[in-house]
Image (tube, rainbow, N blue to C red; front, side, top):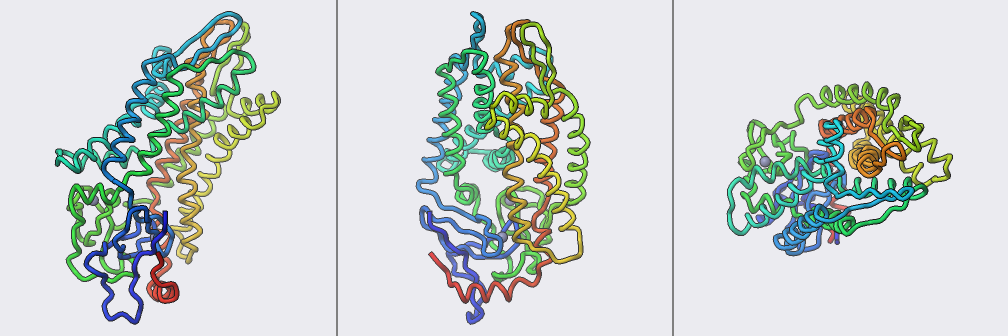
Length: 441
Ligand SMILES: [Zn+2]
Ligand SMILES: [Zn+2]
């Protein structure tokens, strides 16, 4: 896919507005006003200031996402119909279906964990795929309520964790294969295909084309110059549908979302969520995440003791993955988010590009911390041989899930534009850059 720089007129040009075909965009990460030239299929455009991907034009933007989503739903249905995984220990056999991963927990009075797992690996992914089909059909047939479906789709997208669950399955197999015989059912392979198709659906989904099909981007009331920030020109961005709106407008005229120039009380909300995550992190690590029964012997294991046990057993790759996902990532994410809040709240000038890149990285990687919780949920559903061998989730698993959820919410509450607001004025530097580089295809 080739990369296209947005158009920022050079100083030599008399007008600072773009051609009629160019689309006005505001970068959601650094607030820079830019004009996007009409993209050809396969091209993508990145922000000149922070390199955030502003838009990507897909081949056949209606049929491809709809077909991928429909295929993904079919695979999810198949994954629920047939045996998923079976396990044999000392002549005893246990077989589960995909749905049992949450259903067994629910019947064992682990309702909170069961509902979370059901939402993350069944309900949210299925809704996302249905929403994509509905919206794509809506591009042709003008179906009602598309605005609300699109709003919920993009809100729920990070909470679809089928890729993390697949990683959790592989880790569980490595843990179990030394003591038991594991057989993979037809549904397991259907689930693998579902993961791939689900991932591919979001890759080929064209957000700009989707919103443009619902309603055109509202045109700016006044002439807008590219190369300065939205705030400088009394403009703000709708985070939901990417429309550019006048600063005084309260609700988006396209998607009806309440819009603010900067996320309201962003630092306060982020800090409150980070403090909550810190408070929860202590009992999540001290209390058992899992109770194992093996030949009548009961062992409670915390996150750290589980890691130590795997390391002692020589399962180094899995031990390292668990250590990274459950210990390193949450701690690093909490520290980095505190540091970003400090940078955004301080009066000093900060390097917006580096801190912005770090924010995007911790935001992306944070959800992978959920892998240990999903491992426990799956093993609790599968390993059920009474006193011979059984696994039960501990209260630590629920608390750790709460840590991951609060850190994810903290990242969502943080407004990265606060890091760039101290960088004014931007215009001179960008005009020089544009004059030197030109618009490259
Ligand atoms: Zn940007
Ligand atoms: Zn909007």
